[in-house]
Amino acid sequence: MAMKTVPEALNLRSLILQNFEEAVSETNPDKKEALMNFVVVGAGPTGVETAGALSELKNHVLPNDYPELDISKMNIYLIEGEPRVLAPFSTQASAKAKEFLEKMGVKIFLHSRVNAYDGEKITYNDILTIPTKTVIWGAGVKGALIPGLDNAEIVRGGRIKTNEINLIQGFNNIFAIGDLAYMETKDFPHGHPGVAQTAIQQGQQLGVNLINIINNKPTKPFWYFDKGSMATIGRNKAVVDLKFWRFQGIFAWLTWMFIHLLFLVGFRNKLVTLINWIVNYFSYDRGTSVIIRKFNRETMKEADAAV
Image 1 (cartoon, rainbow, N blue to C red):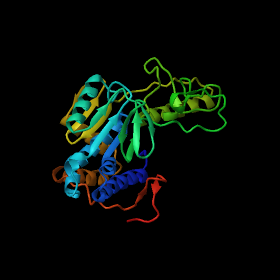
Image 2 (tube, rainbow, N blue to C red):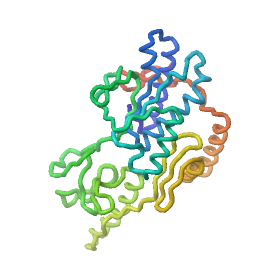
Image 3 (tube, rainbow, N blue to C red):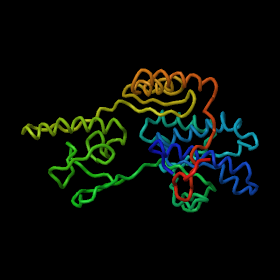
């Protein structure tokens, strides 16, 4: 399953809790193993942070919530096709992230490609399998193409190729920005990173260019200002890549928290979030483990009735 919206996050939470609820009463060892195996596909920021969060649950929360289970038998797998985790980051950040994850108990498979998943086991590298009832996809998404763009050039990932002002090649009045746009430049020969800053900056530049086009003024090519990259792996563990400075560990973790706090809207939201973080840091509290909306694996949607 994927997690891009709040409802999907709630579904994933319900699925994890349902797995352990089922595992408590499951007598078949193979089925119990599948319920307690979690596979994350893709070791980019999303995959790394998800695997780290699952490890935090395993190490600090689930042993208290499910004393009937041997939580040490819970396995977290991270599968990545590239030769290292966090491939877009520096090699220093990548190596440290891998070290953090392995110390937290995450099993990392690099140079590995997922071939299939049938709901019971996932197959990778053609013949290797892992029994699991939960696969979390973090290996990227395809662009949602708009019907009628037959002349557009579609590249890897379903992205639409544009020129330097985000004009779709093959058209003279249709533009694309963000994840959907693929623009080759000297600094980014394989397209810009699919992050929010790319979409924000392209949107701002396109707005200026549209006004210039209306007023018959020259347009300016898009230039991406890379503000750096961050990823949090777990408690006191994060990596930060800035243009002239790279650091990892607790200071990177505090930096990650500060930046995310800074972008919250409203002083009250910032204060409440900070207080919650402080309380959670010392108490390991993750709230009451109540399944508020049962998730149906077959339909990949929430069930009609809550439990």
